Length: 139
Image (cartoon, rainbow, N blue to C red):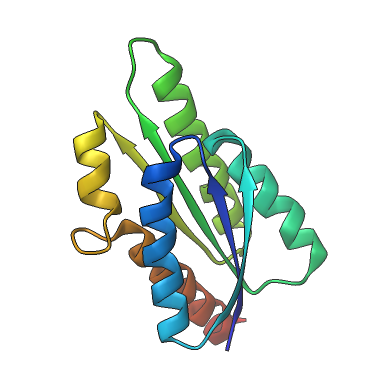
């Protein structure tokens, strides 16, 4: 049984509720313990994971959030840098599942976030657990 931290950016709370529902269901189905911490936006997720890694309290991490393209370049920065930060953590041996949606519009986000559709929150939790299993195998 793993102890998992879900780090969520609640900028789009109604969408994140769906992602969180899927992630929690996946973790509960496997009998894993979890905690949830909220950060202001997707850019803060890698930093929060990094701080939590230092605590030594968690085995794996699930990153949840939604970034919707707007009229400015900000979308590219937030999408790219949050993914880069999570990838850097992964390359350092942190078991993390990336459930940060990067979409063109709310309809795309809803389809990906709903547990009854693409269930990207659940997939992110499963990815974190899969990476934890690999870490244990190779560790």
